[in-house]
Length: 95
Image (cartoon, rainbow, N blue to C red; front, side, top):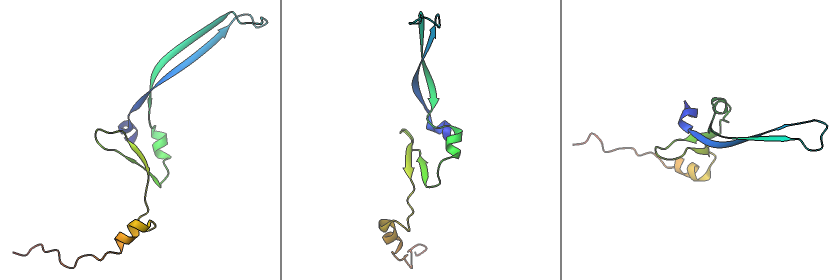
């Protein structure tokens, strides 16, 4: 499913074929074939091999983002936020 969400890219593929007498100094015929093909940005196999510390972020209308996960308790900024005490009362349920 992730590979479908990632989308496709257009790739130009060039193929050359040489033919002629093998003993000649220069081959007689050179055929060039150019194709424009569509390729998945991410295959199903690549999704399965994605490291646990990496992630894909999908936002509607934007290209997918390949990111590294933050381990919040190892990052100083997020560790400081975790040290903030939770409120005792929320104020909900009072009339």
